[in-house]
Length: 131
Image 1 (cartoon, rainbow, N blue to C red):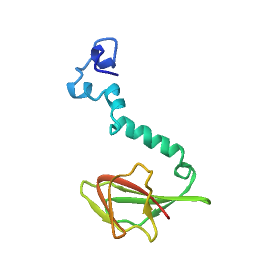
Image 2: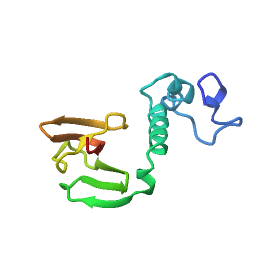
Image 3: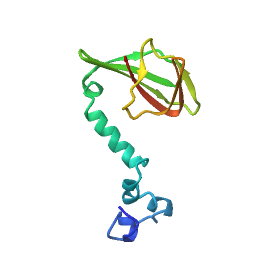
Image 4: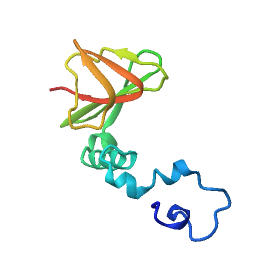
């Protein structure tokens, strides 16, 4: 999909609905060129997930968290990882269990950390582990 082809490369025949200009400008060729694009974020996330087996193979244990947050730990004998997701439209604070710190190479978004408390932006998320 790119903006140099008719119908933005979505189809070779006339689409049954018009293609909005905003969609044409968010095509793959433009997103590939931007390191901050949604496409590159998901590529990075999927690569990280594939290299982090505890996310798909580990046992899961949910953690008590304030309303609007979903927190759980995935654990294998040799690795554990805690995930926290802000499912609300407001910034929320959360004090993770003792010793957990954000994973620097994970694809977290909308997170700030101060004095052991995370501030998680609306729709933000973080992955944490023991140092």
